[in-house]
Length: 468
Image (tube, rainbow, N blue to C red; front, side, top):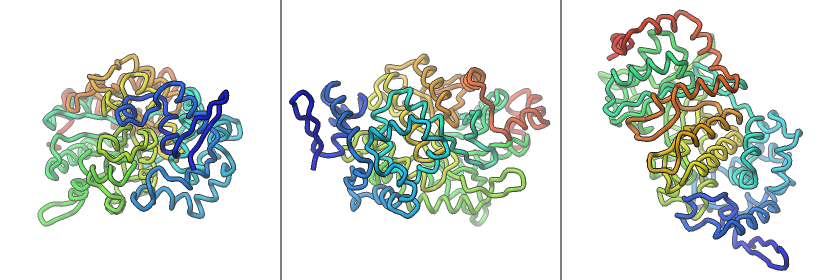
């Protein structure tokens, strides 16, 4: 079929929707690396003008990754074609991509209507409209959308900003981790999750870290949830009670995910495996707020533009569209937290601060449009053309856009993963200038006896007590 646009007597043609989406994408190094980027700024604008005239329904008729060849495509199409998906899509079914943008920016597109629309949107539709939007558009629309999740704290409420306390250590040393936890908790960080990236992926190490964090949580009555970011299969093994070993205290199950079956396979996961882990975590019934026990939000997913390309599993699709497809995987499991680790993969995919900033706001917008509780690791690697000023700009814009949570890393410098993120003080800055509060349960804790006892802790060893 193809797509075309005639300007001043010159007809520009695009052979398929995949090419059109790629050329319409704002410039980024990953698409150039893959050879799918527009050859010039002029042709990028031509592609955007052409994309604006494409009906939304067309994305269900021409898939960027074939249905028969990809489990993620089947998940996307089957969900959209379901009774619930079609009922939601009916609101915008007659619109083109350009008309959809105009509607999103109108007063008619309230937060409530956008939340109801989410089940009827394919990620490719959302990715497409984001390519036509300015930064202020991405902020204005995302700000309307409230996605709330609960475990022991409630994250995503309007007027709130949560944080992941990220106390990583290059040798998984308990005292080093405890020092970072103490620093973060005293600065009001950790209401989204206390999440450690372990150096070792062994069941024994993961279980030990989980027990350590949980002991601190219980000792000081901290309303939060823990997560050790090992591979999902390691966490599943830790959840199993075996002879001589009780089940580990797993709160949130972590896994990195991507936008194609092949890319997920490179992470060692399938949709079926994720469903099994989801069921195991729910069965533990460790969540609960007040008298309510359990809770259905038990996953913590991380994504990032360029992950499918780095795995050789992008199928010629631009990296931002592939990123949006990862959100279809996430929403199947109703996660507690989704985090785009926006600048972590490196300058090969997002070259500089400008590209990282744009990508972070795109990811946040697309995730919220698809009904996900989006956070963002505002970050960059040390060999990228970016610095702290770039991250301050993205951090502030995400605050304006209503991001659910950000990272809290000691000094903004992760000494285990070797990249630059946001600090505990950055969260305090954003809360102050935006008038934001911590999660409500955490706010109550900060004013109570548990936090009072924590303030009396003089050194990290005291925090651990018998947790080592």
